[in-house]
Length: 369
Figure (cartoon, rainbow, N blue to C red):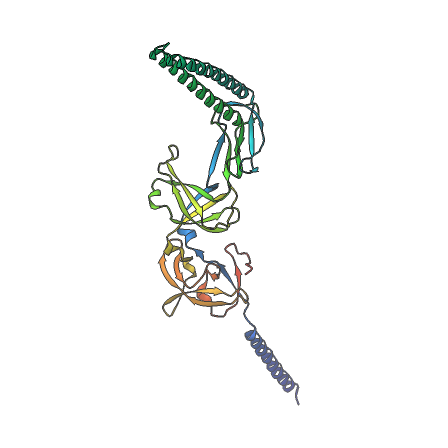
């Protein structure tokens, strides 16, 4: 056999082996599974978070009292600080009682003088009455003495009332809480001279709390007492239901806004006084809707749908939805998805039912479902 024949057979064998290797390589490549596709996902938004009218306000006690002394004087001591919880009748501050004690002593002396004058007038009246019976004096003289006795008795009554007032005022030297609550403000210190009625402390009573907001005059006509609202704490994002309890009849002269008080329906909710809360007002029909980006909408059989991501398997499944309206912010849906679900918001036309994805957020960061 010649050398050329051996070369030809070797070349044929090599060609067969090469072809077999290439076919095996093609077969193994075709059988390799596709890597999960990266997909942008997000939660549907509650419509009330987008289309609601939102106001920021502060938490207040429903009843707040400015407490002050009923008499003027110099503050002797302050017994509480801001933030202290006080009980009904607890002493908050005291005035120097010296001047009021002197007033009591003066009123007592005046009463003693009036009583002495009344006793003298009574004795004169008895004497004149005896002489009138014996016709020693005229009726006119007796009537004069009788009037003097009545005047003396009136002076006693007046002195007794003045003494009672002085004693009451001596008791007013101690400022006491009229209800249980928290002291939220102190505006008087020891050594300060105050007038009657001047605010010394602000007391927020225990019990109901509410949020106070300022509503512009072009919006206040849309609200009524009892209008529903949602209240959200800025600190933790927790949302509770509420309603409008009070609308001021007159606008603030400086801000030209109306003061509106919104009560919490949940009596167990106890936000801290002064805490910042947002108040949402939204139509009941809109509150039940959700908002998704327009890019999340997919059409199948002529009907709208969205891709919902299974949190456990990361697989996507098509869910039909009902479109309420198209907005600038996205598409309003009345049913089909819930705010807690994850949906694909981009590249929806490249997905197939059951595909597994690698979820990322808008900043291209991995998302843990």
